[in-house]
Image (cartoon, rainbow, N blue to C red; front, side, top):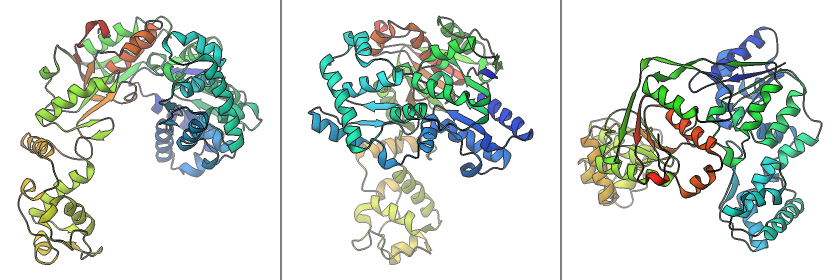
Length: 502
């Protein structure tokens, strides 16, 4: 029996799946007889962690079948990390073939391939889509700047290189799993984030469910935004002709009623190929605001998620945050490095009379410069088992200041110092998690925030790609709009000819 579970934004898809896991365990099915596979390691780990807590199970022993598909194939094939292609292997391959390769690696989270070399990207994408390389090239040659003959030769050379080295890539793992008879029988099989699976992953899924008594395939075709990486949402949608039942989770616990829900439904209604489904928003009404310029957006309060189709569109937001003294995260990095943040917070606590340990003090010493005497700067006179007051360090451990941080910290440039002073003047809370986070829409999938700022600008490449497939563009901005729990703020594009107009 096969069932599709459709989970619109914020409807509690993972919770629903774990409730099903609970039901089967209560019926006497052992955890090891349950396979739970997700597109990303993050989602698989979250499911395993929540299941372990809920059922008092051990993740490593009881829930070792809660994995990504790549991880499962890796284990079943008895692979080791040493046998997998790594970035340095691709660089060596590039040197042998005379092609520049700076970056080339598979994401440990979702198995997607990232490289600055277009030849490698095309070779990988064709493998993921399970289509002939030259056929794929011919379908995209108008937007590619590479030679057809060279592409074919490089594929042959790459295969030879891997064979000589005894190495495999992520696609090889799945191909080997599909070809070999190493699939154990599952009483129940769960496939999560199904909208993001590529055709090669679907072939592995079919192998898994052929040996399972019950299969649940969960996802949301409306949030399928990884076609560029080989995801095949059309295959997911086509499964409606093969399964025994289709269920839709109908209540969103994230999306508020009113204009945010209405806008998101307007966007997704433009998609031609999708499951016909509806969901209910929360009873409270959300807020939708529009702006013509980034300087009009007041992000001085609350938690924000700032989204765009490409990272460089976020530069203006970054500049605004620095001007206003707002604490932010950009490209996964906090605007104040964690070491500096700890030093600042610990310095203020120290001045108020608290005691610090040797690691906290050594971190401060990295920033106070000549305000700690030579010979003491590495904290060699501090003992790991003790804590110290600021006065003790002044008397015995080389510290020669107790002034406020901007008079004591010498290792800060003027821009950083002014930025921190602005933040403190504005009452910003400086901790590990900035309240303003910037991301591409792709990078924020699965995330949410009370307030979301959505930018409409598009790259030329995106416009050209999406002109042939408008569905993917609609899904992208639908995914962005549905991250908002209370307020959605929409910023007009700089160039309306290069924008997705909401």
